[in-house]
Image (cartoon, rainbow, N blue to C red; front, side, top):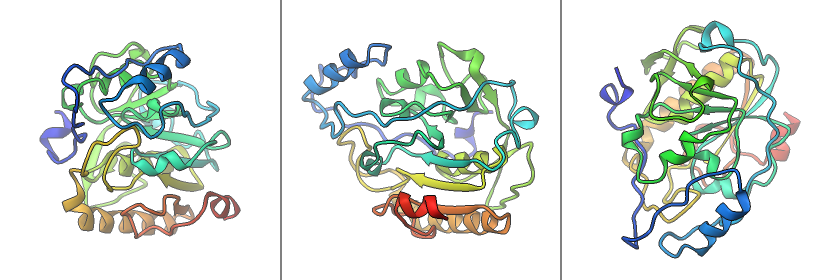
Length: 265
């Protein structure tokens, strides 16, 4: 059963198309050509037309299931969970961290792990292409597959857990709230993270790649923030250090700090 049937509010905000003839550029191996096509577009205001955040892939595909193939395999690692909020544009280099991204994060960086829990039909036009062609070594989803994918052999199955009842040590499932970075944080813990910082989990207007308008979950922010608060406290009980590295983020329950301070924790 698709997760949409369990929590219909979890979906990608639709992009407002200012030019009916505009087609989002498809991702590909030739980054310079792709960036030029983005830069030449006038239909969506891109704030990072030529920018990519530096990452260094440190993960590898080790099996078809999160549990037991990956749980604990990255014990002691420092993880960055990357959402698609506009604040991600303030970062340049995440190469020393394990990065878990969600959805079409590959517009700006290639993550060690990608989390996709929506069916491809819920993505706005062009956004799925970035998932379809993902170069991430490990792609987590409960859907098999979530949509057409060029590298389906890198898909890793997860089992959806509960909402509002965090059980971090139930390694055979991943609890959830209304947005996928929450699940990515739990996956980071299950992989063995000792520190988790999140970026781009903002719930403010616009995605990092364009003027996409008000976030559809803004009205649910108080509830979501409370759930992040519970999750953060549960992680703290396990000895995991946490931080929100995006000062403009609407998630106020996690301590906000610079990435330099996060490194010193």
